[in-house]
Amino acid sequence: MDIHIRDATPADQPVIASFNSRLAAETEGKILDEELIGHGVAALLADRTKGRYWLADIDGQIAGQMMVTYEWSDWRNGMLWWIQSVYVPAKFRRRGVFSAMYEHVASLVRADKDACGIRLYVEKSNLHAQDTYRNLGMIKPGYEVMESILPGK
Image (spheres, rainbow, N blue to C red):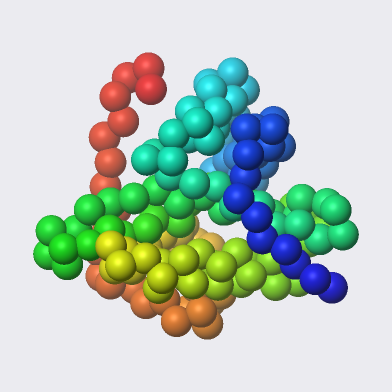
């Protein structure tokens, strides 16, 4: 089984928005506003300064997605790439799809002179995902994520 990783294009917006909706429902029990997520995906696809999406393909079927956004680290004088919006449909899980996407992104980080590392956040209860990330060489740095989302956003 060959897994091909490619950059997403604006034509992929509907499937990415659908995957994001499925991700939110499966992992957090949240129902996303379809119009809002559609516009959000389209905005990122139109502006690479916001981030990038990659899609995994197996035999012509989209088998997964990964988004990266960027955070400048003054401590490291480099850009951290944040992995987000990872989704692999159930029929493609446990087949190396995430690992293939991660290795693709990691190779791009290594080749980018301005990039200094990769980060992601994971649900505390998602022990399977944490094991996967550890097996890829990721560590828990000891930080807790906190947020304040503005009303209506």
